[in-house]
Image (cartoon, rainbow, N blue to C red; front, side, top):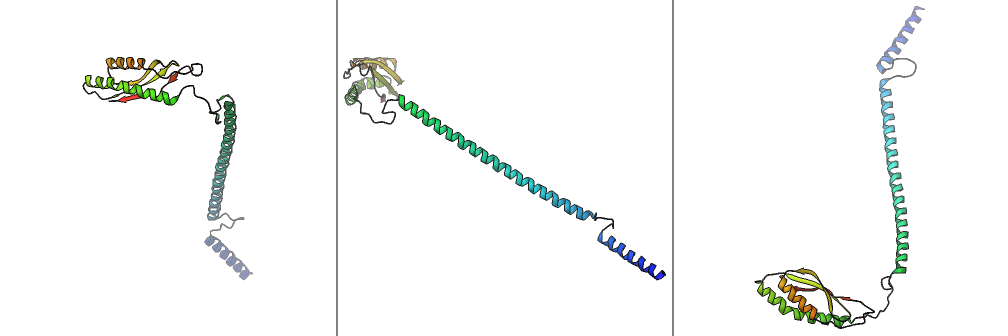
Length: 200
């Protein structure tokens, strides 16, 4: 009996030493802190990974939703632009609406351009005299003319003038004396010339 008792003590002592060396407390269910920490770290990593995936999925869903919204808005804008273009085309002159229509011009553009060139020749001596009088000043003048169907100049629309008032008056006198070719006023009430410019 004594021998059996010693054997049991040796067995329990061996088990206790094994438990102590393995880090196990010997209670029911393993409570080894290293195992708990490892499992806890793995769980946290899994949770973080899932959160990262959820965040990426949310961003993708948001991007897809925004892209779909933009596609719908662009599609609606294109439809509206087409409707607006169609509505404007109904009210625009045929050539602006994209149709080629041959219209008869009430004025002869070539003759009007020739007359403007003649006027420029008439004005050059006046401008040269003004430049000499102003002691070689550098600059330019530019203006447009409004011409009536009778061929008379109705108005000078000054755009720029680096000459003095005396030169401007001399230019006006020459311009108002000049006559353009006449045309049918019922078709065009007035003609606007391109810009006339002199540099000096």
